Length: 390
Image 1 (cartoon, rainbow, N blue to C red):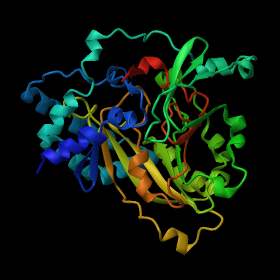
Image 2: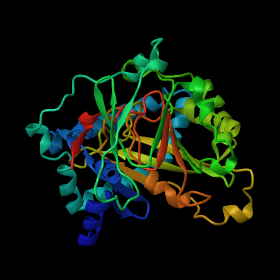
Image 3: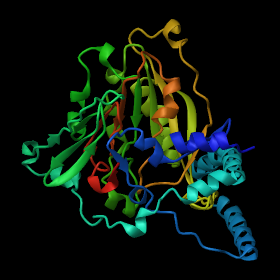
Image 4: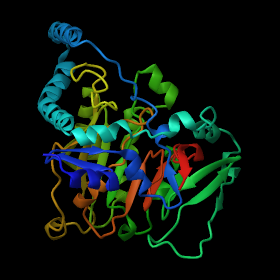
């Protein structure tokens, strides 16, 4: 039963508990908790999936029937790897359906979702045509000579949260940097500069969103990808805190990739798998962004979770934190292409080691308060055009 307390908590935190196995997340509200003087511009974040069409129910039923028959025919033509992928899908399908049904029963939440994009889309003109391509800039010979100017804000009263966000200027563009955060911009060849001098300074939450190799021409236009073998060299063990780390890896639904992660990548990193989370993508009206059984464009992605043991991690240290809940479904309206929802808060209760947790995101394209962000474009979504002044 939906309660006013649930909605009040959602409006405050951006997280709504649909049931014990599913949550809905408003990424903008979650991100805004990282900022003091700015807020994320809702229309710029939720730039897609807000246009809905009315479809006759009889036509929809006929379409669904045709899809089922076509899927049954296609299953007979799947190769061995595709059949394995379909088996994974069939195992997760009931979880995803239950989560979606829980969302559709939450009438108050559905009303709130329709207003996520806010009133600014039609009334506020934003500079959406130009922004720096950090990937292209990084290829220039003078890239190491570029300067980023940080502009600190002076307030009469100190901020109670222990810091304040600031503006940064780079090549005549403004970027918003959240409080108590760090970013390091480089390509994969310089990632070893992140390794701490001592394991006690390591990270106990490591989130990774690699640019997986993909044949999609659209994805290649959005950002360059890397062959899977390149990720074997990521120094996850050396980045890990001495008491261990929770590692969260975003993966696609391709069976070849899942097999690579389970058989090669996690073993090379020293990571043992403990759980799988699912990100289910919906439109503003609560409907899925695509048919759940659409083979090549399913409306969900997976987050694989595992533990990397630290130098002193043993049963005593590992007993002090909550075991990860398997098969959690996170439902949200997607942002820009390939932009992931900020799941750090949902993961913190499972993180080993000292508190507050030392958190890092690899291949990051945005920055969160209290986190270290590394990649070749960590300022990608920090451009001031994505923000409003509070």
